[in-house]
Image (cartoon, rainbow, N blue to C red; front, top):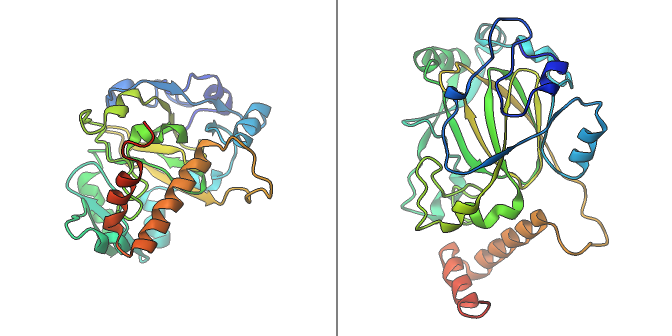
Length: 296
């Protein structure tokens, strides 16, 4: 059972919290992977706290501790889900490692040498549960750093997940794949073993982190990078994402532009060049030729 709203709000972000009912903490530091970069805590606030609304309006991350957004879903476990959706058809991804790097199958033709690091299978939910029983004790699955073009309320249902976020202005530190690559919007940097020769600016990255538990809702602003991991030996986790579009573009653009607006511009430039050239492989060389030695 998750911590009460009062307990959750008073706990320092990223620190183990006591269970509302139970003798010990819900998780401990030994269940977190170790990385080379520093992090700062993401605020944990009640939905009634004016600061929470202010952070969301400013498109800054915050954990809402008492929204009741997914309260009815907190009863979900494998037994409940199997009873209700056991015969449902689902896409299931499997990988030989703990990392699940998303890829867009439609873009695979642009990079003929691309080999997916995970496999997609279609199966019934009960079949998924059978496979899951063999591996659930390992835990520690990771969705590597990526950003979305929509706002997201990341609602934790079961278990605990560590969420490390990076603001859009750290774009140059995280080295995303090209827009036409199957792994578009994802960082090329291996957080477990960063290659500083290829990605030198990664040494300057600073994250914002928290650990969310059942009932917590993390607001992830659009274009904010997020690296998500289940805790080591943390068992099964269930999360529900509520994605929605940001506010309409204002008729009058205000300058200077925000970091996420600049990221959107860069994406559009890559897309337009790919269409104009007729070959996504030519985008990189053209951009390099265009700026080389001109803006230093």
